[in-house]
Amino acid sequence: MVKKTFRKVAVLMGGDSPEAAVSRRSGKAVLEALRFRGYEAVPMEAGPDLFLSLSRYSPDVCFLATHGGHGENGALQGCLEVLGIPYTGSGVLGSALGMSKSASRALFRQGGLDVPPTVTLEAGASPAPEDFPFPLPYMVKPESAGSSIGVARVDHARDLPDALAEAEKHSTRVLVEPFLEGREVQSGVLDGRYLGAIEIVPDSSEPFYTYASKYQAGKSRHIFPAPLASHVAARLEEATVRAFSLLELRGIARLDTLVLPDGRVVVLEINTLPGLTETSLVPEIARGCGLSFEDLVETILSSARLDAPAPTPVR
Image (tube, rainbow, N blue to C red; front, side):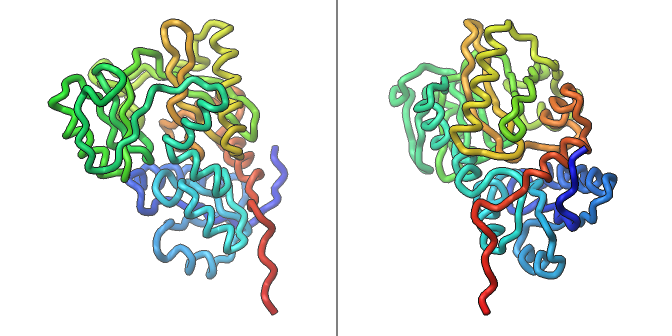
């Protein structure tokens, strides 16, 4: 049992992100878990009226159940730093780096992790297949978005413009990378402690691990622990902890990887505020480690803090 250090908890959810609906589901689950454990917890929409809501309620801490957009890219974290309210998850810098696939991949590559060859395009670019140093098929992704929103597999050059246009709806920059045949394996880390890995097998009707695969029951099969050879499992654990450290993250995070047939672990991205819904992977990993959902939520809450000391009131 985690010792309670906070009494009044504001659970922040929703906001401006395409993932707002998923965020509200995470927030509802967190809210119920905290109330079950005896906390005074209230839901708050992370929208334009948030500051007013926070000033009226004056919470001891904010539990961030926000996904994507300003709720995950460091903007909300920066606002809470200014207000002097401790919050769960990573700080301003770690959140910003984690949300940017280009920035995080650069740091991962520099830190010795294996990442896909990546071309970053500004919105409005019109590349031809010969502009890429890898052949079709491609994966096209928004540079700063999650939940596979705006992601497309491109098998034919004629489909590339539409895929780019869709990705640009969710980010000012777009990533193009080769489609890699591999197993979808995701791993969790909590306050620097490796929790384990889970394999996702999408339904055969899905071209990859899509939004539907993630959030519609029956669209994917989860295998925990991921059935990996011992040397591959060790490689994945090392990569997970190193990625967490390279971005100076805290709290809970989930690393998305592909395990290739030759045993290579290719890092795709890290999620600094992973989903906490009934179909989310981190709670499933935690259960496999003996952590109930309530234990997981309370452990995340206990790690809440500020990057900088709370401001001293001006007299």
